View 1 (tube, rainbow, N blue to C red):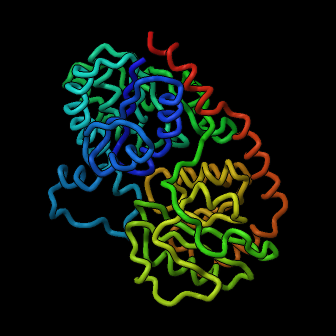
View 2 (tube, one colour; view 1 turned 45 degrees about the horizontal axis):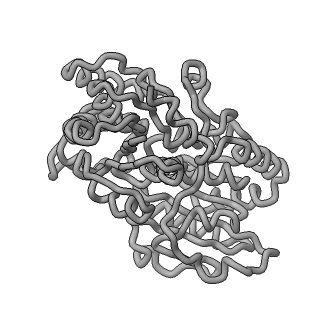
Length: 384
């Protein structure tokens, strides 16, 4: 069977699809992955064929507002940015992906398209080409005002190209859902044709930081990251200062948006890296302090780890809400994320047996979800 997977051009949207794409290839299917040039090397390192489609977030925002658009005011409310997000995700990105994927689908004529749920252009291109398709989530589905704005803008574009049925995130198609059911949005669960899939962490191969393997386990290990898109030097500095006061060891992944050198001198129990293989690191960790990105949130769910969430944007605020509601952690938002608060909340989480028990129960739920190999065996039934 010929399969085309397609995702937006970012780690957080691409990585969740790779386990199923690789499992489908290993099951003997002909798999092609269509995404932007920036992410194609990642796909090819996974041993998958790729073709170019779409463009990255920076180019998408520049296309919408021009390269000289003023940066977002860090003191502005998240809601003030919603119209910008609506334009980019509801018009600019779908328009570009539809334009690129339509001829690609015509050339390859796949039996099934698996489109990442943020990639509306993939859903529209498959439907209008008459090709069966299923969605693939990248985390917890988070209905709310920003999704309503994206949907409204997307409906305008869809009508322009003759597509009906804008119903995010599924467009009426079955959806591969990598979020455990107990923490998934009730609004999504109420109407979705859901294909559960165990979230499998994906990271490019790499060595763990020195001292992680074989460390003294009498001292907790804390992992601090703000992900690949929302790194903030000030937040990282406050978190490092707070965590450095604990009787613990701390590994920091600065990510591509923050130069580790900008963080200055750090406490002796803190090690700063530009990047770490997160999926390999998490089993060694006792607490995750992070931004609330879907990959890190789900990775902590699957590893049974308490979480302190410092949300910075996008779906991170609703992910933080889900962490708190599940009893597996807490959150600090905006001005509340002070050095003292990060220290105090982390100290409490490391000693909270109730939170640890809830985290382990959630990890057991994740472990019971179908594996990528199991879901790959089901793909032919969706090809029609």
